[in-house]
Amino acid sequence: MSKLIISIAKSLLLARWKQTLVAAVGVTFGITMFITLLSFMTGLNDMLDGLILNRTAHIKLYSEIKPASIQPIQKHPAYANHQLFIESIKPNSGRQHIHNATAIMQSLLHDNRVLGVAPKVSLQVFYNVGAIDISGAINGVDVMAENKLFFFSTYVTTGNYLDLVNIPNSIILGKAAAEKMMVKLGDVIQVTTSKGDQMSLKIVGFFESGLKDIDKVQSYTSLLTAQKLLGKNNTYITDIQVKLHDINLAPGMAKTYRQHFSIEAEDIQTANAQFETGTKVRTLISYAVGITLLIVAGFGIYNILNMMIYEKMDTIAILKATGFAGKDVKRIFISIALAIGLAGGLSGLFFGFCLSYGIDHIPFNTAALPTIKTYPVNYNPKFYIVGIIFSLITTYLAGLFPARKASKIDPVIIIRGK
Image (cartoon, rainbow, N blue to C red):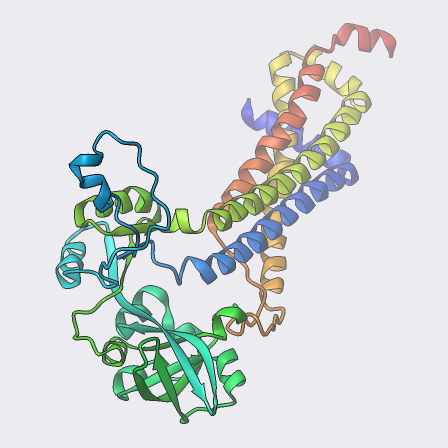
């Protein structure tokens, strides 16, 4: 019986092949644009996320300089029952570095949820250019760990990032800062710390983060060079950057680390809440537009099947008169709708991939993003699975109502009218 129903559905499809083709093209267009839009928008999201998420620690541990929670006057028994108003509270003389940083990092590396740990020394400096001092910031990093966890090499656009390890007292400058100071690769610059300590550093590379304001002030040295510049030993660490296997665990783990190690811990969700919201909104808009296109295509199928029912009233009457039940007629028209959805959906997946591939090869050159050469596209198989499922669901619903109408036709009334 199923073979007979499929055969009849095929005959009805071919009998009105032009209308069938129009319906399939509608689905194809909807799926094509659904795939292309999602691939491009999520590719764009991934690129923007990469600027922040790939270069930002999931959890940052640091020692914050802040006022003591209990002031000396509050400890005095004479004022125990008084309401005290204290103004102009100054920070205490706490450490700027993390106490016992080496032991903390060893403990973190034994946590199965942690992908890796990268220590950092942050310091404010002045770049001495002739008689002019330009304010800046130096990040002393463990070069290997920084590259493994935060893809350091990808935004070093000139020179080799490994030179920070191989060449003593070397520095990689932000490209904007180098242009401001009019220096080139191999030059030696003088830097001065906030305490007046000076050191000559050789320029071994330039980096471009995509954010010009950062590139104007920021630079990188090795961890050892930064510690030497500050006159500290190799245990001096100001930040511990933690990368997790699952970024969603960051808020809870940051709270745990804060309590366990008695230091400040900031998770990436808290630090970049607005950015994450923007990503979710763009993805939601992409899905909404794509689904709208499929619904529009579904209305086209609905109208075409309705017209087919009116034109094939006599055929339906003959089928029911020869023993076909209402549910069999319903299955015939649903089969027609699903055939249109499947053919249009598969074509849409193919053309969507081709269009996405074409966009992926369009040159995209901008000074703000020097490492991006073409428009970003995401070829996630999930989009194609979602696309074909939505295609079949939409066409099934579009064919269901005309099929129910066809199944209720009384053959006696139709034949009498003929």
